[in-house]
Image (cartoon, rainbow, N blue to C red; front, side):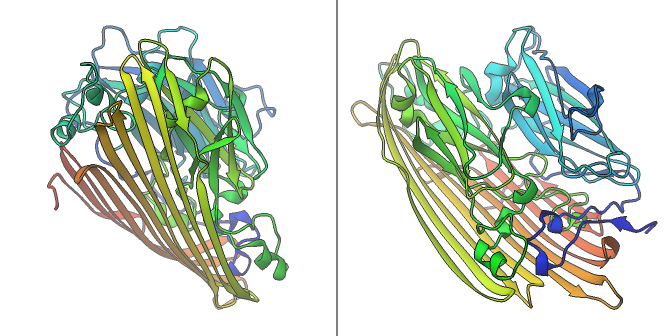
Length: 598
């Protein structure tokens, strides 16, 4: 190692008093490093070129902390230009956003969060890779077909914005070079993603009975949930462009509001939400209750326990909630674990869908309605933004909703003595809504039921120097759509499970100020989409990492890490799997396969 590398580390005795305790800045890679997140390819034949491509932005971001420090545009966290749509002569059915980034300099700000918007509609939220002595680079390719109504806009005044910011006010010599492009493919070249439009529609049709209302083929129209076809319009639920469009939520009392008036022809609505935690809230899932910090005279500021939930209300009525999946950025827990394969969602952060179709009776009426977002038990800070996808019929719609507030059960079990203790939180949230919509397609009844289960068990041992987390989030959504006679049109179920286990141990070593830090991270993502007993799409991604470091004060002296990841995706078009093994930052195994495993 050429020199002592500055890190921000704190023994587990005081892990929860300073947020940076689990953020280590370890810039030890000798050569320029390419980082990557495991996913499946969006294009079946990588040799097939797109029908056309459009370069949307090429820009260099430097110090993006304070917009008032300089008039130079390279020192602002956001850049906005006019959006360039695909040429009208380009024939395409699917769009892919490509976000490419390169970092120069060994001390750029770590864990920057970035977002991409068209006319205030968020298409991508991502974060930065770790710096290396010779720089680093990475790219994200995301299917954005569901944003077609925004992508195809021909208004010459439509804005295209990219935000890249951080709160780290030290070591601001790093520079990020960003290039954003859009590629357009025809249907013969594209491979569908789990969150994509249409998906295995042909396979889906073969495994369900479709009903037709007045010969309009409503079953075909509704297709796969929730983005069977792209929306006719998308309304951004967001803040001001100068703040990156996202709402910045500072505490549980901080409620962000906006007014919307939707088209009277709306027969379907889905709210897509982007959520990420930062600052004192980055490791919210590792937070003990206030009683523990106060009893041990630790610096309070986070506390409140390890439960957070994003709440969505319409005119004061709660219509949906999200317990967000923990995101581990590239310097999180132990930064050496994420070289070069990053954690789940680090580069392509997930969005969360709340079906508002049953609630159209609350949203229609040719008047403004208040949309409110807040974070239960939240602190500083959260970045939240949303897109409201709207589908239109040929005439005005009448809607009725049977509204019942979602129910919730929460149980806390805290036991501790001194710095040792066990803290367990269990949350169960259930909701059910039925909405009747009368449109040019006839009468359609939509019933959406959802169950969310959250369990977090946090254990402190050995005088607080050993910390263990066992957490699991499970979300099951059922949708049933019937006609006026009660005959089933479509019926489907989406199940998502996100387990996370973390163990971190800090022990003293020989010599003043020297200690060892050992970490284990086991992260998972399991998602399935089914109709009846037929699983149409399934995704499983498992991450298993271990690492240890010898630390002198705030400097990493030496260390070793392993990162093992297994990714498997299956749909009606086939299968894709990838297995990656990383030792000491070097990829020692990388296998891909298209063989389906039963």
